[in-house]
Every structure is written in C-alpha cells, then in structure tokens.
Length: 83
Length: 412
Picture 1 (cartoon, each protein chain N blue to C red):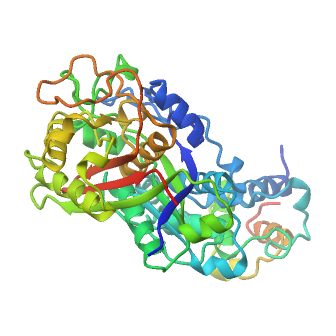
Picture 2 (cartoon, rainbow over the protein chains, first blue to last red):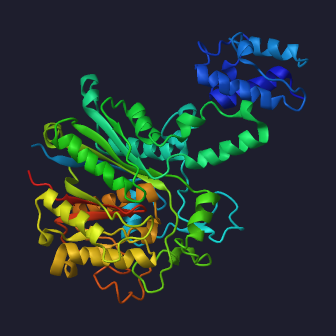
Picture 3 (cartoon, rainbow over the protein chains, first blue to last red):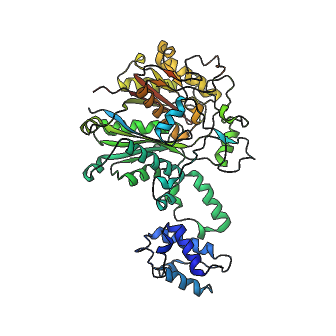
C-alpha cells in the first residue's frame, strides 16, 4: 500500500509534469516545482480526487492559501485523518 | 506595396505530420479515412473519420504546456513550429512586435466543454478544472502559437465555419501589404472529433455513411457521393513580406497573390443553388490578385462530397471563370484528407501552394463515375503533371460564408 506521501507525489508528478526526484517534502510548489496559481487550484482538485474514497473533504481557498510546500499538503491531509 | 510570400509550411493532417508527407500522400492518392479509433463509435450512424494518428504533443512542446491546451491548439502550435522550422525563421526581440498570428478554427475547444460539463454534473462545481476556459476558448489557437513562437503583434482568430482557414490568409495578406506586420503565422486548425458533432452532422445527412468502405467514403464530384467525412488537423504557413524574405534569402514557395470573401445571405446550411455567392468570392480573388481567369491553372476545390456542394461549386467556377472553367484543373483534397472544417481552407491553401511549387495537380480519389452535373476536369483518380502558374483554394461554410485565396509563382 502506497504511503500518503507517495500518493501525493504521484499526483504532483502527473499534474505539474515534474520529475519524481524533484518532489520532496520541502519542495516549494511555486519556486521549486514551477507551479502558478492555476496549477495550484488544479492540484488541489486532483488531491481531493485522489483521496475521495477515504475522506470526503474540500481544500477551501483559505486552506489553499497555507499550502506552499509538499509538506503543507501532507499536513493538511493529516488534519483530515490521512497520514 | 510590399508583397506577401509563403516561406514555410507546417501540417498536422490525417495523411501526414509534415507538409512534405502530406504532399507525398496527396499526390499518390492515399486516403486518411479509417474506422474511428479515438472512441467507441459503434452506436453512431457514422463510424468513420479522418483522424490524425501518431500525434504526440510532447514532441512539439513541453508536456505541461500541452496539458493546458485543447487538441485544436496543440495541432496549431505543432504546425506552427514545423512551419517556422521549414522557413528557418528566427526573430530578434525587436522584430517580435511586427510578427503576428492568424489561426482560424470552426469550433475551438467545444468538445472540451462536453467533457467538463460531465465533471460538473457528475462530481459537482468544486471539481471543474480551472483550466477549462483558457483551454476551450477558440482564440487559443492563435494565442498559443503567439506564446510559443514569441509573436507580439496581432493574434487573430476568424470563425467562419468551413471557410475559416481561408480568412487567415486574407488577414495575413492585409497585415503584410498594409505594413502592419512583416511575418504572419497563418492557417487553420480543428479537432472536434466527438460523438456529439458526428451525431448532429449525421442527422443533418451531411456525412457519408459508407462505414464498411472508409477509404472510398469521401468521393467528391462522383455520382454516388453521399456526404463528407469528418476530419481533424491543422495547417500553418509562414507568410512573410517580400523585403524580409529577400533580405534573409529565404526559400519562397509561392506568392500569396490575393483573395475574395462573400456571403450567400441565404440559408443556414445550403449553398445558393446557382453558386453565385461562391462565384463572387472567386471573381473577387482574381480582381484582388490582378489576374484574369486564364491566369489560373488549378483550383483546390472545396469539394466536400455532399450532393449540394459539388454541383453548386461547379456552377460557381463556371460563373467566375467563363469558358476557362473547362481548361483549369480542379481537385478535392477532401477525397483523401476528409473535411477539416475550420482547418479545411488551410489544407486547400497548402495543396494550392504545393501545386504551384511542384507543377503537379493532386488527384480527386474515388471519382469513378462523374456526376453529369459536375462536368469540369477534377483530376480524377491520378495526379497530373502540368504547369501551375497560379492556383486558387476554395472554401465555403455553413452560414453561406465563401472564400477563395490565390497563390502564384513568385517572380522578383
């Protein structure tokens, strides 16, 4: 069973078209993974989809404002009981 | 007044992913029509189409950029890169403001609307892609070409149904000859292969239902024609001012001599029976080019293979050219490439340019039993080697929009 990090990493690689080796917990979505504001909205939707079977949640705009790095995504998912 | 020259060719079509391959297959009479592979079409009345096969967007642009583009825009960007490469086009920063794009389409990303609508219904508004609007908007063909090639002059998008592609060459000529631009990437693109338009056009009785014989389905001017074959793809050419082209010793395929546009002002789908609207466009193209009917050796016909179009177009050519109509060679690229809708005019233009360049007229395949009402020389079945001093491309669209653009051999 893939870990939450592995699953998030796979979504990020698919959505942002970056190399798997670039996706580390510290990686900044904008500075390191070259995302723009539309990419981040798109990414949050894809994360919701990925975990929709286990938890029904929505990444609201105020949540998205606090997401800068991969670790921020993992922290948010932990608040939804996904870790 | 400076002249507008064709210095580069790019094509993504059902019979070739370069202008060179397109021409090889066009001259040898190779059909690009097959059973639809993109989706399961078994419940549709029409199960055949001219699909672009083997196209990988990532061969032409980075995959992240490709993900933010509908297929029609990917085709346009790919064809534009090919055209720029063929022209050995390089732009200095100060030249970019005088470089433009003109990329026509019939329906832009309409099929992406259908897919995103399903997301809205099935998963709710929170799951709708933030990219939906900039992906489906019809102007994105031109804008993406401008983004990828760094063209900071005008980015134009004509929407004129199946005449669309020709409008781009009208715009390109005007931009160049009026001195507003020195380079224009001009053409048309379409990628609308989806069950909805297939069903609608089939119900309109516009499409051939020869599902069991795909390569024989598109048969313009033939007695047994019954409609067109749905196609997809893009053609983009580099149109360049004479001064710029000569200064950099560019290879010149042809001169974009002129064009004419008109509207039937009559019916939403049927052309005027006497072809007079289309005739006006052809006559105006000759006038705009400073040419007489006798100067024209070839016409890449609109030639859809619908019962109405081919008779009406035949009458239009006779009305515009008089007796010379019987001396000019015609042929329909759609017999092989299918009908690229908003890209069709640009396919015809490419056939015209290459006919002028190679002194060769491509054939109309499947023209086995000519319709008695279609009595011109449509270059049936086999290509013809003959001098082509000048060639026109016709395009007529729903709404009654007519266009004709003429290319001729360039003489300095």
